[in-house]
Image 1 (tube, rainbow over the protein chains, first blue to last red):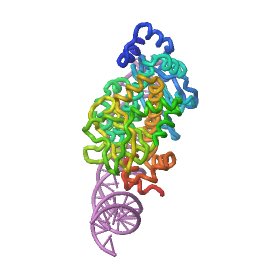
Image 2 (tube, chains in turn orange, red, purple, blue):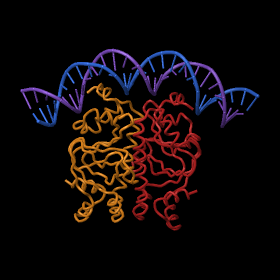
Image 3 (cartoon, chains in turn orange, cyan, green, red):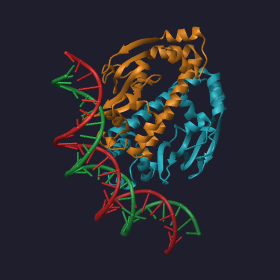
Image 4 (cartoon, rainbow over the protein chains, first blue to last red):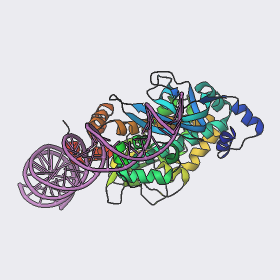
Length: 187
Length: 187
DNA sequence: ACCCAAAAGTGATTTTCGTCACACCAAAGT
DNA sequence: ACTTTGGTGTGACGAAAATCACTTTTGGGT
């Protein structure tokens, strides 16, 4: 199962078995049940999560109680309240399970340890971070450019997997549209 | 002037004079006039830009000719069409000068050269990229959470410098609101 | 097989914001 | 000094989406 992580790293830099074992020893596997929280607003955020199986959501709850979803966490994705994680402050975001989920946990200490010990791992994380930055920029552009229906269709086309596991009200929350409005878009 | 760059790097990792001179030798200084393009849709994007002086805007022009501003470039900021830059594809974004501007240019080749030669520079760029990711996440959250007026006031409070140099129609385009609507928000 | 809760569709109404049209002002160019 | 251009405010109007209220469907748990 952790081969998923190895494959992801090896898309950027090759690894020997020994190297990967060493890297993996810095991660802790964990399993969570549907609706269980991995991170909750106000708490510390010791870990970044690499998703092996299942589905997570990362979201903020606004003053009037509405959920705003920043990201989903499907297998092969990283997910975390990075602001709280990197700056070691309290979480302002929540992460919980859309379905039963397995993750690999990476503490900030172990991340920085790996990065300083293995230059190629720091390289890997830089590349991942750059790619993440680009993805968020494109999402912002999509919010500026497109109306809700266009964003919906774009997401449907770009990431059809989401629509198999995730209730539409969560998709609506991710797109920044009301559930009712989204429901009126042609199937 | 290039001290701005040194200070930024030294917030993350200390440098000797010799090290900084070596780093700086990988950058090319350039000056641009108001309205001049640094990057134009359809062209190659050989350089990332570190802004020393002036003001830039990074934007996409949609099919119906509207500008959607992704980012401004003020002194001490990095700005680029990172998708085109890192993947060496043609630009889909434009960068031009809101006012006369001075930058330091960093080619992808020199960036990767520095990163592989000096582990601490790779560390620096990873940290910057992480910080950028967090900033974009917060912008997305602000777009999901807040109505245009709240976003306007938030920006005003968070970044009052923008309002001194930048015409309001550009602020409107950055916030994703029409110029007229923005104009109706309290002074 | 049944019950209950959550998900999803739908109509009516209200709100928000974009668009169009125009007036005004200040700065830049001739 | 005069013109031109770009930036800005403002009113009237319409389109799009949020909200509210309700129904239908689905799926999980006992």
